[in-house]
Amino acid sequence: MTGDSSMSQSSSTSSFNEHPLNDPAVDRLLKRMPPNIASSFSTEQLFGLREAIGVRGGRLHSLDVRSTLKLPFLPFSFYMVFLMGKNRRALSDQERYMAAISLVFFLMLMGFGALAVFFIFLYLAKSALGINLFSDHSIGLWDWFKSQFG
Image (cartoon, rainbow, N blue to C red; front, side, top):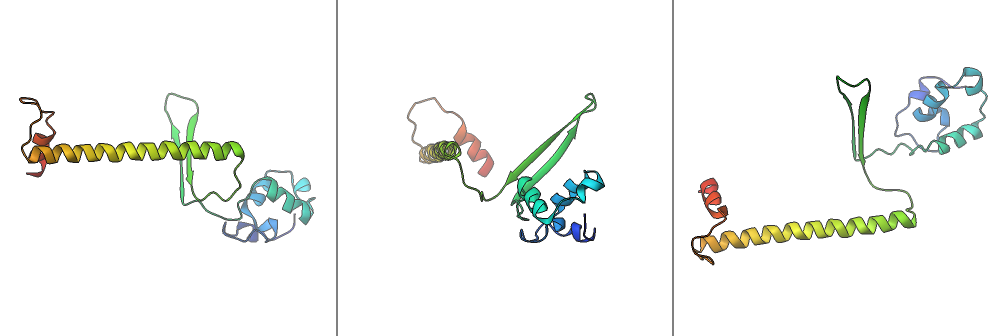
């Protein structure tokens, strides 16, 4: 393996066309191998390794949350990773179908939420105007609202 070790620690925002030894993911992979095997790769093979391990070309996620939870009574720990960002890859037919289903579900959820807010607003407006649809019956929302906001 040739190259300066300080070059292998370059930032993760480096260009995808740079030499693979400048890529931290390739560097980590090569460091896990015996030195005689790690130094035997040609530049073309290193480019192939970088493509095979799925290097993102230095793109960062807009939201990247990683955490570890170690419970005292268990001999192992759990990890959580939550990533969010723009999808830059082509979707398969199944992924497109699931994306469409997710969009419909999200829109329905938002619609039900908006409808709930509308009905709460309508109920508060009715109560503010003193309109009672059922005598001696109240769900208490107007009383709570008046106590909170005077």
